[in-house]
Image 1 (tube, rainbow, N blue to C red):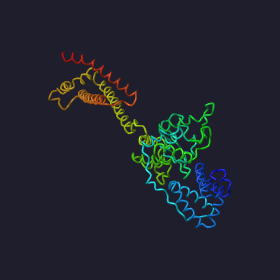
Image 2 (spheres, rainbow, N blue to C red):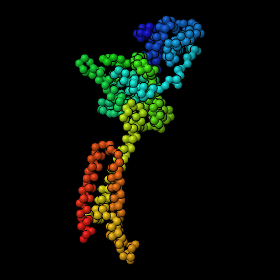
Image 3 (spheres, rainbow, N blue to C red):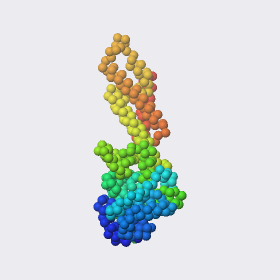
Length: 438
C-alpha cells in the first residue's frame, strides 16, 4: 500500500490530493504526505477507503485504536515521526468530513541539540557527493528541505555560472507563498558544482537544464529527490559518526549560528523564507546590500578554519584606503608647495625644518605681526611642509607594522612611493649641505 500509484487509485485520496494541490502544496510536499499515509495504512492493515469507513462508523473507537497504535509505535520510532504521521492522517480525514478529537503532542525540540560545526564536518566527510552538496546548500541558505528539493536549476543558474562566490537564490516558499531570497557561500558552490558535474549522460553531456531539479533522485533522471529518501541517506550517514542529526538540523544550524554572530533577526528571517509581517514594508534591502551582510556573517556558517572574518578583512581594506588617502594628500600638499617655493627649498625644509623656521621668523621687531603677503605665503608653506613631514612619518610607521595590503596594486603603489621619496631625499642632501656651507 505504500506504493504511490496504488494509493492514488482511491477516489477519497484523489480528492484529497487535488485539494492540497489547489491550496498551493507543491509536489515535494505531497510526495512525503503520500509516503507517510501509505505506511500508516500498512501498519493499520487498512486501505484508504476502509480507514475512512472505520473513522466514520465509530470515531471514538477509531481514536482509541489510534492512541494504542501511537503508544506501541513510540517504542520503535520518534515522537516527531508519530506527530507528522498523525498530521497527515488528520488532514486526510478532515477533508473527507471526519474531525478527530485525539491529539498527538508535537516533539520537544529543546531535547534535540543543534549539531556543532565539528559534528557537521564529520558528517560531511562520510557523505556521498550528492549529500555533501545538499548539506552545504542547506547549511548556507537556511532554506527548508521541502523548498530545496523543489528548487529548479534556473533559480541559481545565472550567478552560479558567472562565477559568483556568493550567488543569490530566489524562490517562493511552497508552504506560505512568501517570496524570498537567500545565498550560498564558496564551500556550497564548490560542492554543488561537483555534484552537478556528475549528472551527465553516457557520452559525458550534462543532463542539467533550466527546468531540472537542483537535486534529483537519480544521476541520469529528472525526478526530484524526495524527502524520505534524503532523510534515509542523512540518517545512515549520521549513524556512521554516532550522531542523531536530522535533515532539518541544517536549517536550525543556520539560524542558531547567525543569531550567535549577532546577525540582525530580520535578515535571518528573510533568508530563511519566513514572513516579515509589517517589517517587510520598512526593511527593504537591495540584493547587493543583503549579500554584503551575508558575507560579513558567513564565517559563522563556514567549516573552514582559515577563513578570515569579513569584519577583519573590511578593517584591513579600510586601513589600506586610509594609507592611500594619506599619500594622495601628500602629493596635493607637495603640488601646493611648489607653487610658492622651489623644490630645493621644500626638501631643505623637510630635512632641516628647525633652522628654516628660525630663518623665516628672524625679522625686525618693527615688522613682527605684520608680515608681507609673500612672507605669509612662505610661513603657510612651512606649516604645510611640517604637516607633510608628519604624514610621511605616519605612513612610514604604518608600513612598518605587520600589515599586508589586500591586493597587488596596493603593494606596488606603496613601493613606488617609497622609491620616489628616497630618490628625492638623496638628491636634496648635497644641495642642502652646499647651501649651509655657503
